[in-house]
Image (spheres, helix red, strand yellow):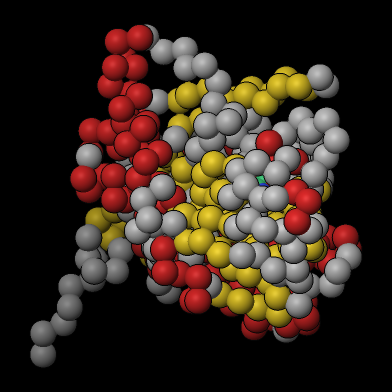
Length: 378
Ligand code: OGA
Ligand code: ZN
């Protein structure tokens, strides 16, 4: 009977070793990387790395390596320390590049007709039921927008909702904001005027990732909400005008927000790509775009691209238009969803939205834990 030949043993090289993994291919692993990621490097309690590779006097080097019971076992020069790496674990790290992240879910683009299909969840249900909370987070990651219904008519209601998926994230105007008529407004939002399609607070270094707008009163004539899936629009621009798309991805433009007590400035890319080259987000705000400071001849190309994208955002194919009702809280990805409101008649009633932000990092963390696919959950 033919016997399968045993795979060749690990080969010790100068700066790393080669080992045969499942499937029979030889893979190279660097000694620093192996030593740094020995299971004993991590504190079981905090799960953080406590091994200090900077303290090694000489570059790590293996004196022996063998495969025992589907694991690579290494003995290190100097210390004699033994490290054990399951071959399956090495296999999962054998190919360079960002590892699959359970919180990177395929985006479901939506269009003007999305309103009846928006994911809706009762505030009580997301507060008390883990499965509903998970569905809400899923909707935010895939669709970028969801509505909480039956919100308590209180400030605490918004705080409680935000705490379910992150931490209320302050910006330069504080942890919460009240969108209603202000005397001496320092922001268009606090007037009865229309607000053009925008993402919020691009003048912050890191504009907040998730936005909450809790509608407490809305009895005015006008004041409709307009929401657009900016990622869907960016994908359309990439398809129809790839050169414009490239300019918007590669160029940072300045944004500002300046008044008596503050002078915020930051540069953003109108379209952001992730490490895979996929559309990660958009930033748009005409009312907060600073005077562009680029070479004027470059602007010959940039401005038409910027305007084409701005007009495409307004295309009726993409704009979802509806009235936000008292008791609803719309929650959306501020790096993906572009929003606006139509002008309203100030004397016709009362309009009051209370808002806050959280960040996308905490939202993704929530998903990894709720889905049981986190780093240490396997
Ligand atoms: C804002 C905003 C929307 C609205 O305050 O940034 O977009 O409906 N408000 O008033
Ligand atoms: Zn806004």
